[in-house]
Length: 420
Image (cartoon, rainbow, N blue to C red; front, side, top):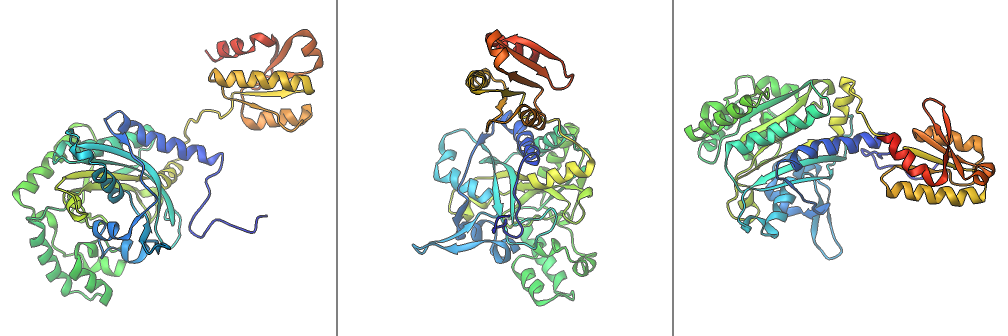
């Protein structure tokens, strides 16, 4: 046993389970690649100020959960707790918005970090796939992203998730609602920290998961009753476009997201099979974020879907992904000359797109065939001294047990023919 273990609240992805995570990432990314989104990758850490401005200084993410540190040079950095602020910063720094083709459509995949109480579905290190459409205010763009996420989940075989939808208004109508909500919250029996949060950002109180708080919020004013005509019309068009695409959703007038930058459209994907950590992904429109971090006005929308929680949702529904075998052919040499010949054939097979592995370490026939079975390979190539003398290799079908002698120089063509 090693002296060291993975840090608390983290986990290692190892085979064969890691193949499921890779398949989930690919399934989420596939609809984005087919819709004009280009891949972006940002550093794992950024300036603390980027998240303080963008995510919001009053959010739990910034005040309690962010891994912040000071470098030897005195810079204040933080491990990224979310992806949107980093992606927008990178797009602005590279002047992607000046290329003349808005919106700038980007997708990303990576690890994120939050100091939270570890539990199933909530880790201190977690994986997300995200998408951002930067620089356009268009209900069709909001609808597109929701539809693409729905498409990704359904392609994986998920059926028991729900889409919650709301509008958070904009800078015209939200201040009026904010004042009404603050008046309501001041009359509740809340602890000092929650009352302080209500003064800074009262919408964050609506997101409080504590039952004692939620019970008191029953009669809280709803933002939908305060939306201006422009926000109402915008939200109604988003709803109509999603409905026309055949995507089911639920209006949730109490839905708020845990980040300060959201405006207008906000949505969440939830799965009731996951218990308290039911959100598998979410996002929304963030029209003012660019200006918050020092950029020009760039209305934008995006989402992030949790890979870890999507895997848990698949498990909850009993969905098993049809994953390709990591190895199609396993080579078993018996003797030094056979080892040289088969290694060359394995290299040739790989060059021809056949997933092939080799019995390394000079294993005997019994041990090597056990390794072949464990690899999941459909075929085994066995080469001994007599086979060498005859110029053939024994090709064994691991499913049927049938064994055929094939010419050494014909083995690549034979396997390609069998693969169809």
